[in-house]
Amino acid sequence: MKASAALVENSTYSPSEDEEFMNERQLEYFRLKLLTWKEDILRESGETLKHLQSETENHPDLADRASSETDRSLELRTRDRQRKLISKIDEALRRIEDGSYGYCEETGEPIGVARLDARPIATLSLEAQERHERRERVHRDD
Image 1 (cartoon, rainbow, N blue to C red):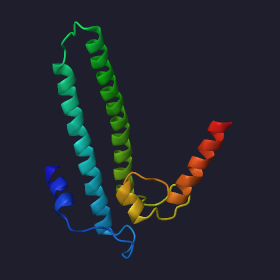
Image 2: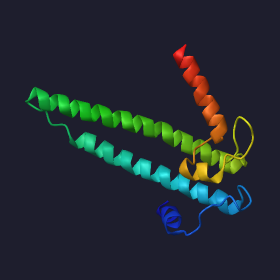
Image 3: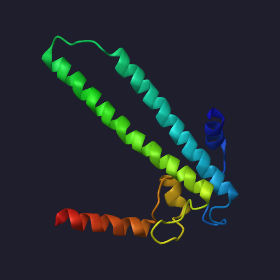
Image 4: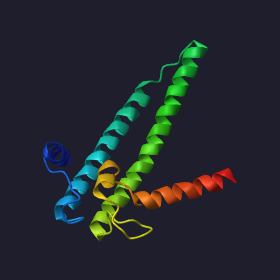
């Protein structure tokens, strides 16, 4: 996987709206980007686990103990969000394999290279995402 990370980082290729949407080169670009992202998350998670295992000290001061517990809680919440993100990355990789990557789940239209480059796990076009967020806001306000 380290080789894939190097390919993404060293590549001068950047997908463009001017080329055929989701051609082989774009698909490979996004596949490597997703794999690199997943690898980084897994590495960080491993480091967190080592840190949490090594930090077993019992703080005599109540304030220090509370601070340590708060830090640990935040770290675990972050890792839980990243675990969910890995699931979304895996789903995006499956979509690359089945040929549906880059197309809006709601409309079937292309999501857009710029949006995918910024958020490679996107499943909705910008317009569909905005509609979805507006509906959520209305339901939340009710």
